[in-house]
Image 1 (cartoon, rainbow, N blue to C red):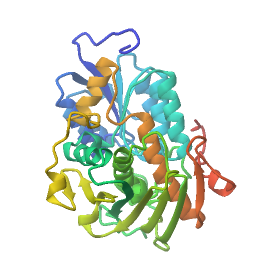
Image 2: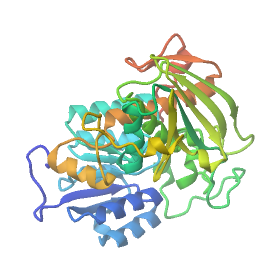
Image 3: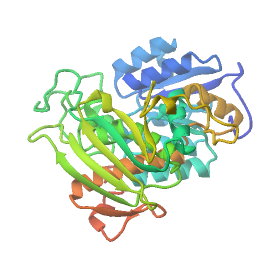
Length: 402
């Protein structure tokens, strides 16, 4: 197996299995298909329509397409796994893949709970696997530039970080969230789609892209976009090895009598042990989507290909040889393959992804508890609040345990 015995496929390519090939999964798969060092050898999805579409794109046959991820992971000719399933499947697939000696490109958030993310990190470490989380902004030039400006003190002492994420849910398919039960389509294994989550009547409004607005599966934009922007905040602040120690959530609003019951509007405030404040807020002002670092001498704002600052002088700064430079990745997917081949670092490792996802989950839990909470970054537990600690791991139904 690649990375253990140093073996590669007969044609010298990394053999990749793609599990979860809906919109994001197919986008990821296209990126890997464009890498001359990769060969997609297997497709897995509980939706037959997704499977067939991805099969044609990868030029495979039905013999290499699966409904159950366990059959894919059992294949000895798979070196690495792309895991782009809904959040509630991340930990089950990632842990099984790591234990089977597969490297992982796993979508964000790392786990659907703090405990699941920690279990993924443990499995990756124990089995000496490479993991790249899909928090791809770490491979963006302007994001890295913003973080280097902050890390080198070019905005003075860092005082506060603001993370703006969308408010109103971007629901696809024209659904309202008031849909009733309907027959399960023949092409979907709905029981497998639900997996460890509570058993619920099927409606098309529940599945695929729109799962993220349903609290059984995800806390809305808190982890959907929050995982990206909080990750940038952590990188720029130099906090990758820790998390805030306090969190509170206010202005929390959810839809009533709706399938889409995750928090839709919120303001979540965090504080690190050194006093640094981080605020995640929902907004419909697209200009504020991203991460703003506020220092004693100015601010910088970053989102994808956007880099702004409080003055042009900050943007014109040329780094000195003595400045701290951050890990440089020009392409998130190619960086993963680089690491698989070299056994070197990835831009978004399991541990850094765990910390960013943990911050998001802390906010989601605070929104449910309705009171300020204290958190220990070392134990990854809340201080003196058992109701909050009970949410560190999702309840899991049936055989799906970790």
